[in-house]
Length: 121
Length: 109
Image: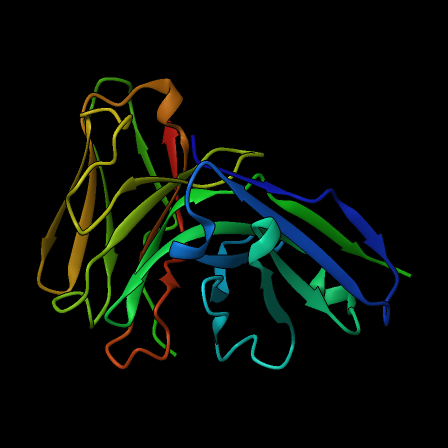
């Protein structure tokens, strides 16, 4: 059974750093893309970026380039999303999802349960 | 950036057919995908490559494509189908391989 298990919710202050995780199991972690999706409170889904754990090839949405860093450790089947300096506007639910990607398009077939990040002074 | 346009809301009575549309200039060239998201839950893929249904998704969910519009159809709507539905596709250039529509709230009356 394919599973993506995300780390728990976080409460942080503006300016702090944060790294959240997504552990995959039940499939070959290195052979599928992992993507990250933001959902701000009461709003829709926004694609942030994707990584191919097999070779760490990473693509970012232009909207999030430079704002976050996506990485992966294939030895422990885990992908990461990190911020160096959080802002209140980063408050959102963040989902990881397994991506099927080819010919400049793709989709997500399995999703993690989400990690709620709250940034408040 | 590229945009996919969905109606904010659709309402139907139980047993009727719900149709949710999604419009985008690149849809004649790019596949569309549909996700269902119930309150407090992660999204679930219900349609891929315009009209394919993943295993475990009920047959009442179907997808179609015509020109710049794709449609998610739910036949014989049940109360449990009440959720937000998001279409997703890509722009022509490859700059945005994942683009989500704004979402449609399906209300079962």
